[in-house]
Length: 299
Image (tube, rainbow, N blue to C red; front, side, top):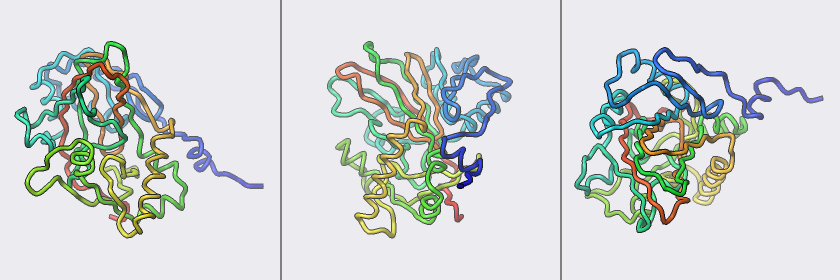
């Protein structure tokens, strides 16, 4: 008779540890048992107290995707919220735009050739230090519905892999290339010197939780170092398919006007669903610069 230990059985079922759901400064309603929470009782148009900031950082570590509804924010309030987590990031494509460099416009209309983020990805992983997180503030949603964003828990994705695959991936690194989305998909003219291109471990360790993270994404990862081209392509496509077709990894944010969602870019991926053509959606995003390069397991 085969004996399955409780840890293995839990991973096979997609079980996750119980996490904190009670905070002193606000109320929390979770989206799934492992990822996502709606925050009630905060007005982000006003500065947060030190206690509120402390609790926000904690719930951010615990749940990864935070949804704040009924927020009426100007750009300065939006940026102030982002700065609670660090220095604001300047998106590589903003170099050629006559807008606030710290604000990325996310606008889709009937005339748009594409919508930003319409594939599973983590933000700007082509940079040497990818963003720690992003905060998207949506003010216009399609009147017909649609335009949701899906998020995936990449810690749980790692945990659901076989031990043999985990061990194999932990010794690998992959190249993340900004030309893949910005030139190949968005037809953007790159800046002098091109868009960023950097190498990161395939399995990283989250600097705060210590959990291991599957760190390749279809938006930016071009290939895995040390493998033959067909080996790299087959492995990456299998991992991408696993993320896209495993619902237990996902939570879903249904946007309403004046909703802000903050996500931890270090252990989530997301997919902005373009299912509302020819209707429109408008938002603005700020991202927070990470504090260090992604660290691998061996480091």
